[in-house]
Length: 458
Image (cartoon, rainbow, N blue to C red):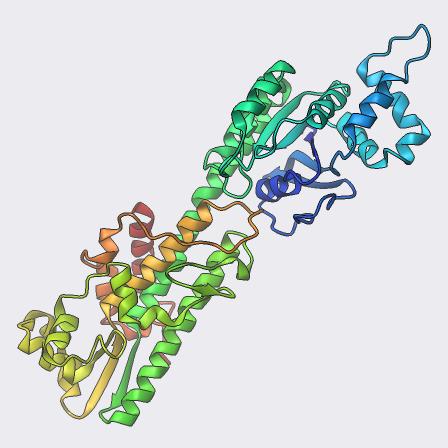
């Protein structure tokens, strides 16, 4: 078993060192991230393992605060007739009293860099290239360890990447990585580890294993997310509630159904956030508000369907809207006999026949509430948007998740719903929301997996 590669994450105060580590470790609780300077006051470590074998150790260090004064001090350490090299000069500094007093924070950084195989020098690309940064690099280079500059905040307006590239080249640092810890590129970690492999040839295989493991974990998360969304949709499609045909009972039943669907969607949101290792309060959206991790009550608002471009039409829903004007107005629910009358009036006889004896029974004075296709479409769109947003989010992000309107998602807006959802309509026992649920049926699991495969393929 190889010894783990050790990396010291170094740089000026408040450039995003802890943020980088949160994203690399997928740990939103690592260290303390704040806009206040000098948040990290001590060295803190994290370990990345694959199949139980530790491959990489990362050490967060305090920010360098006074590199200009430290460089001046180091240059005065040579005794008459001496000319120390960088590591020897740093060693003498660390043995002296100034390393325990005036330059205590800088000494912590240098000790960790000397004990590591290499350093990741984090740069806030929004900052101008000041003299203090050049002196920092000179001090760090004195340790004799490979340094890989990491450009953070490169997606921000006003970033100064070209200036930094020129300054780093003048210092002999030509290998660098663009890695925004708030919104990292999908191949960001791969590029980081591949660049490290150029500097640390002996660690090439360890770094390659990390890249392969990272890719495998991403695929597993996506597959698990598809299963969670599929189970939500099957639960909601199979949900059915029979109620006496009177206004008070119907209103109570409709309210209960809406509440049950909202709660079921919330459980899916929480499970997805946990799967991607985000906090429950990390989720929020513009058009579809997520407050305190909860989707807003607009799930049953017709205006929401319009905003997302969900096509309301086909079968019972269209017939009811044209014939009775009930289903969509009360919140996207199919309401028994009114729906049947509307379907017949609208000419959707084939759809009416597919509901069989259940619709005929409603003519005897009972109504059956089910979730309309348009609401299923909206549920699918919302969860897929959330997953896409988390896929592109770093674990150092401090603001709430922003869900963007998908550019193209015609399958869920207007296409034919997957067969698994159509089959679920005839199997109310497949829904965990029904009192007589039988969730262990092999056919139910088969349809969940088929729907998950459909979601993942998209």
